[in-house]
Length: 241
Image (cartoon, rainbow, N blue to C red; front, side, top):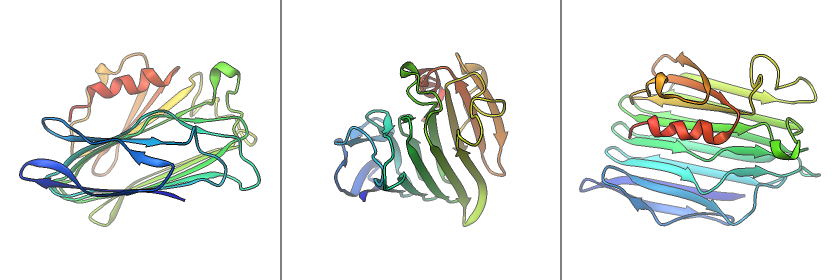
C-alpha cells in the first residue's frame, strides 16, 4: 500500500504544509506558493497502477488555508492479473473556512484492467471545495476503447456529518456498453466536477464539450463529455480560486 497524507494550515495568512508523509511510489513536489493559495502536485515513481496496487490518499485543510491539489500526469491502470483490481482510497476533510481544489489528472484504464476508486469528502458549513474526476474510454489511439474489465468509482460528500451527495459509477463493458446512451454516448472522455461554497463557472464558458448540471442539496455537480481529456480539463481555467 502506498500512502500520502497532507495537512494544510494557515500560518500568518499563508497556507503551509504543516505535516506531510508519503511512501513509494507516491511522492509530492515542493509546494508552489501562489499569491492566494498553495499548490501541491502528486507524482509517482511508477508508470501506472498495477493489479493489487493500493493508493491511500488523505488530505486535511484547516480553517483559513487554501490548497490546490493536482497530479503530474495521467493515471494509467495496467492490465489486471491474479491479484485483481487496483484500488484508490481518498479521504478529504475541509474545515469551516478552508478551501480545497482537488483536481487530479485523468484516469486511463488499459485493456483488461480493473480499477476501483472510493472518495469520502467531509465538509463543514463554510467549507469551500471543488473536485474534478475525469475518465477516458481507454487508449483510444491504440483501439482500446472500452476494453477494460471494470471501472468503479464511488464519491460521497457529507456536510457537518450529513450526506449531501453520493455518486456511484460502475462500468463493466462485458455486461453493457458504456458507449451507449446515458453515459459516454459518442464521446471518449467524461469529467465530473463538484462545487461547494464556491462560484460555479459560467456554463457558457465551457467550450468544445457538452455538459449537464445538477443541484445537490448544498452544492452543484457538472458532468462534462468530450472527445479528448484536454477539452475537459482545459475548461478548469474557468474555475476561479
